[in-house]
Amino acid sequence: MQEVVRHKVLSIAADVLSVSPNLLSDQSSSKTVESWDSICHLNLILALEDSFALQFAPEEMEQMETIGQIASLVEAKLAQAGKA
Amino acid sequence: MPIVIRPHSAEHVEAVVRFNRRLMAAGAADWMQIEPGPEPSWLPKRNGQKLYNEIFLALENDEVRGAYVLKHQEFSFHGSTVHSIGYYHHPISEGMINKAYAAVGALMIRDALRQEPLLYALGMDGYDKPLPKMLKLLGWKDYLVPFYFRILRPFRFLRQMEALRQSRRNRVLMDVAAFSGAGWIGIKALDSFRTLRGGRGACTSSEVPGFGEWADDVWKNAKDSYSMTAVRNSEVLKQLYPSSQTQFTRLQVASNRAIVGWSVVAARGPKPRFGNMRVASVVDCFAAPENAPAVVRATTEALQHSHFDMVVTNQSNAEWSRAFERAGFMKGPSNFVFAASPQLSQLLSPFDEAKEHTHFTRGDGDGLPNSF
Image 1 (tube, rainbow over the protein chains, first blue to last red):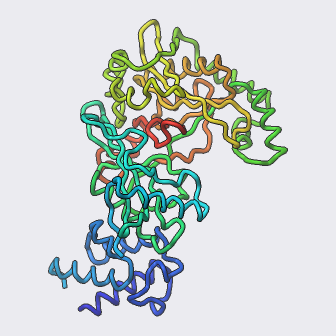
Image 2 (cartoon, rainbow over the protein chains, first blue to last red; image 1 turned 60 degrees about the horizontal axis):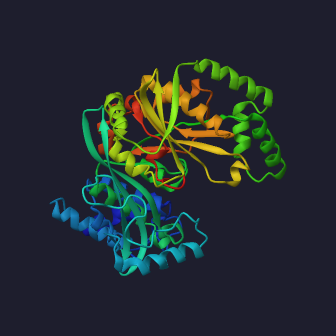
């Protein structure tokens, strides 16, 4: 299940950031992806909320710097909500 | 390292200074600075007052990576319900100069929304800027608050126009000219025509040192007419336009000897885009909609007598807009955006209908007290 979530997060991020999924990894962040600006970051959060039917609190958004951190947070929230 | 949002406090002063230095070094505009001290210079929190500003910082360990200001103010909805509303302003993010902090902008908006779900933003310098784009993504509803101007001294206006056309330093006056017909005869004819359409009535304005009980009467008589307006009673007006701030001129307007409304006007500081023109701003105004024409006409006449070359204003309300048009004002390109959070939009439902009956002016923006 974790891999499924991780793959879906990667796919959403690639779509929002307009890059190939092959170019993204757990370490990818706004520091490493050229197109990852403030608008894209917000788009990514909203796309994830929409796709996974989740809502991120500000203190959770504080931890969303890399793809890996974002995927872990989504997994944790899905588990908490009994969706995983 | 995670970024957390906290209220500005004395322990962060040095970090704020470092943040400002980093932004300045990267070529950020002068206004992109956080006030170093934790107490806002404009509308600081005082015991018992419902109108105040608070500064919040986005912190990464001991370093500041962003900031925003939240203004708390009471608003009246159709005169019956009063809510405390948050005004999200002066957001500054290190993401503007360093993409590593791209997340800060979204984080700050979400934080402000959690503190004050009834939230609005105003101004923002047009739809092409990052903030209104982000607000749209978050489902905020918005509209452009119309901008109006009137040329009071066409000869001076055109002479400035000519100088600016030669220097090609900027475009604002030329834009205005394009809207006004770009000719002295055209401006003059339009000016007379529009003034005549405004009609003449027994309305007068008197400069007053401050707001008293008479302003409370105006507020009580007019508040029901607006779908949303900041409470403008004398207590609030004394805070917004205190007598100590001499840049503001407060005009009390009477019609047939009864006080019907007021306006606050101010001379705009010299700006290259206006050349050497003497430009006045109708910063704020209030009256029942049926008395708007009297307030606008009396205010315009007072500014004419004060030898201003041009007057500008922003008005969200449809009836005030019509009053300005009838007094010879022309509509120009606006970059003054009003945006309401989803919860605030619900209070204005149906939004498209309610927006015409809101009452927002430059006095509701973040430009006070020195830039309006």
